[in-house]
Amino acid sequence: MPQENYPGADAPMDATDERILVGLATLYDAIDPMPSDLVDRIDFALAVAELEADIAELTRGELVGVRSEETDSVTFTSGSLSLMVTTVRSAHHVRVDGWVTSPGADVDVVGEGVTRTVTADAGGRFSLDEIPRGRAHFVVRREGYRPVITPSMEI
Amino acid sequence: MNTSLGAQAASAFVAYREGDRGQLRTLVTLLTPLLWHTARAQNATKEVAEDAIQTAWLRLVDAADSITDPKGVVSWLVITVKRESWRLLRLAGRDVTSEWGVPETADETTPEDLAITSDQQRLLWGHVNDLPERCRTLLRVIAFAASPDYAGVAASLGMPVGSIGPTRGRCLARLRSMLLSDPSWEA
Image (cartoon, rainbow over all chains, first blue to last red; front, top):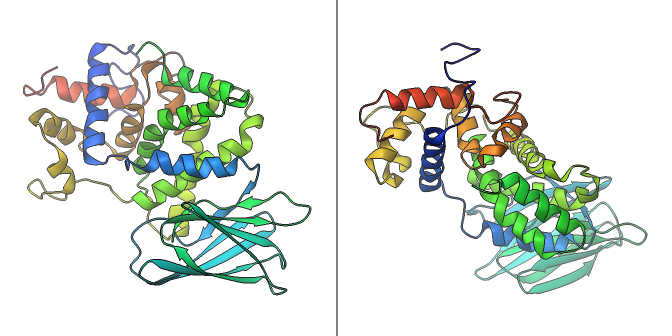
């Protein structure tokens, strides 16, 4: 295959090209469809982000997927702040044990229809029990700083 | 298509920045399918794809005021999803260059085969898999953009199709000639 100019590469798009591309889109939607609830989940995350918060990014672990283990840990980072969260699951509820690099910060666990708040101790540790399973994200609030919000994760 | 994806996205983005919060939902609905296929075309797992897309949207809200040209919002998101997919894949120690969805042998049944319902789709899938991986990546994403946006989206992926206007580009030209020379293809 020529590396530079394949015959017809410089020609304008025509109806056949459009049909091929429509065919490709249909094909990929059939073999690998976007999850039907993805838009809703993004919407949910964005609604919270409008609190004008800084966004923490995931630096260790995964946010979604079927989790086989009862316990797992993820770490989020934003600027100088890190938040490590370990979740321990029972049948319907989750215990969240966390550590934040900012002692005394307030940490919200925002689940579907429920928000719980806890204040980190002098060592930055916090714990919340009986959080319903489902999607949740965390908001860390400190005096004098913008809140930090994490992407939502399956807990 | 009368109004291109890029133009619709730009107008929703401008309205959102001017205070119409509902336009953010419009933008998400409009562009997330393109972003899904962008991430998946980078060999992102479904989990990584979701994480990357969610992060890109959160960053867009965060950076909304710093995007000078609203017409660039589609490219901005495509680039962010691509980079974030690669970052998360590296973090997870995954091989970002591994093949995706290509049958090992001609008669091996893959999940893709099961999802394909027509002979025309099967034929198209067969030819697509004969293309180099770069072309498959590009065409998969381009298929979810409207024609006036191809050039911009392709450039965002680091694979410019031509400097001026929506020309066909090498990958589409190649797939087209494969299909046109296949007697079973109903052009």
